[in-house]
Length: 124
Image 1 (tube, helix red, strand yellow):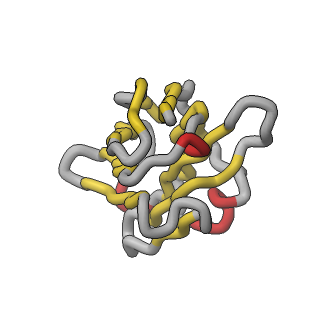
Image 2 (cartoon, rainbow, N blue to C red):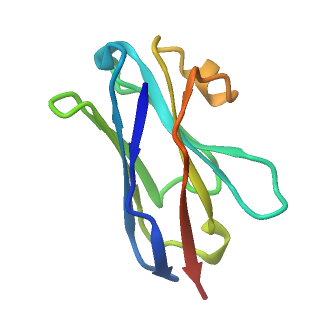
Image 3 (cartoon, helix red, strand yellow):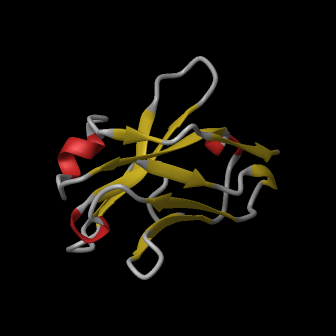
């Protein structure tokens, strides 16, 4: 199972926010875990994913240099640090996971597990 513990909410343009995804039900150290988001009237898109064993990551071009994904095997948690946020980052953010370290598989939205999502709103 994927349990999402997230601290979304309202952020000002240029501000920061950190999302956390606590995972259980599979071996954390050999998984792929990441974040998608869906803005109003737009399709869900991949934001950032990480293979917990290798630390390899993928980022959407729109967040490169601003967002950082990391994993903590001591707490089985994946974090998404979002800095220099923009109004276009406003969306519902979803944590997703795959029990195998298949990064591209997860990036394509084929994760086996999905969290319920948390709203992040960036005010202009």
